[in-house]
Length: 153
Image 1 (cartoon, helix red, strand yellow):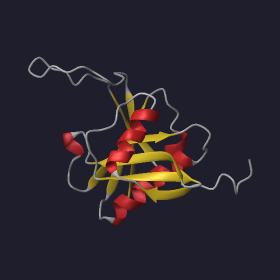
Image 2 (cartoon, rainbow, N blue to C red):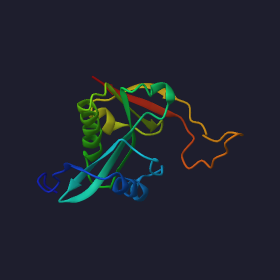
Image 3 (cartoon, rainbow, N blue to C red):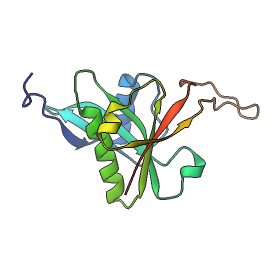
Image 4 (cartoon, one colour):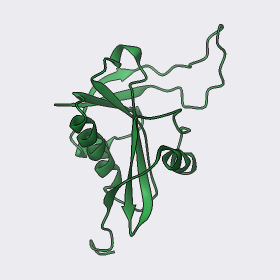
């Protein structure tokens, strides 16, 4: 494949369409409940990846100045698409006045795309269930440890 053939562009996408893409293409998580905004990366007018950005899930990070990339899903065979999405999420967040953006990866994932977009690992998070005695839930996500990544102005 030549580089012209692999030209990827950032494009807008509606939340409903992004959720459907995540449902079909994410390796281990269902789509999030909602988002502040979603971004797509396209190739020849075909969406090949999406990112969904929302408020931080962790209450302590939800300070009004921070966003969280809650999902990124990309079809196989499109190198650099993930990095483009992470970079676009930060540019969009920053342009709206946010000061910081966070995201998480499983501790078994390399995070090469996030690193390439300029993000840094800032901590390890112990995996856990959202289910409690007072509010039982069925876990639909991996319960292993995660790495928290961050980028800021």
